[in-house]
Amino acid sequence: MSTPSVNRESGLSRTAAMAVMLLLAVYFLLPIYFLIVAATKPQGDLASTNGLTFSHFDLFDNLRVLFTRSDGIFGRWAVNTVLYAVLGAAVGTMISALCGYALAKFRFRGREFLFSVILGGVLVPTTALALPLFLLFSATGIVNTYFAVFLPSIVSPFGVYLARIFANAAVPQELIESARLDGAGEFRTFFSVAFKLMTPALVTIFLFQFVAIWNNFFLPMVMLQKESLFPITLGLYQWNGQTARAPLLQESVITGSLVSIVPVIVVFVLLQRFWRTGLAAGSLK
View 1 (tube, rainbow, N blue to C red):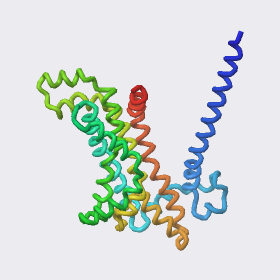
View 2 (cartoon, rainbow, N blue to C red):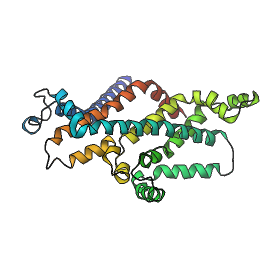
View 3 (tube, rainbow, N blue to C red):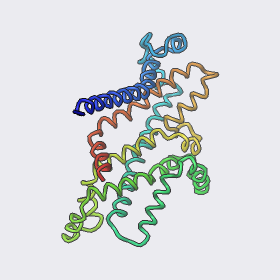
View 4 (cartoon, rainbow, N blue to C red):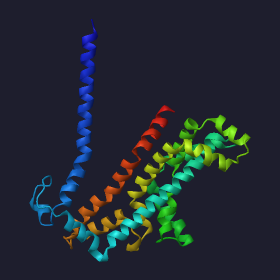
């Protein structure tokens, strides 16, 4: 007798959930839509037209101005950002994988204490580490170099935490023992057995690292003074600070912001089947 009421409540719950999801989707996608619209407008239309409606389509001219302004410095910033993000995420993922695998599969004194310290590192804001890192790098003479941004980017306590969870879930101890019985060393066992099984998880870690480094702003601002070393985030911030005396920079800042999000979207689309699997494995564990 209660089946109709249960079905009605279930339908209302689904409707409410879908409404909330729709509102959240609009909330997150509206700024991107505004950015797309603004990037297609000429400078004069930014203030004189509605921010959510298209006017004169001037995107290609805006892109030309963006990549030729200041002797093409934006292209240099883009290359720097790719180097920081791709290399930093790749090396950081490998370090996280090795550390997480060791914490998951090896028994040694102090293992749990070490893992607790790593978890504590997850709770420390990256901004709180910027000044100590600056003082350390100043003493070693690598401030205002690529290494000042690259080296901190390859260390990720959260990546180590995820790698340990995924190694426990995806790598059976029996396979490791079999590889050892066949005479494989620990590194060969990791790369020939564990690494392949952890691939979806490692792609997830790579994406977390990639996005964090790509959007990194505070660390480069503290470490770098040369424009030629800036990532996109810091370069656009510098341009935005000059719009009061050079209003024409505003359109380049908006167009550059649109260009800066395209690689992140492309990477997520290309790797989505891997990171979805990795997240599912983590949730099952």
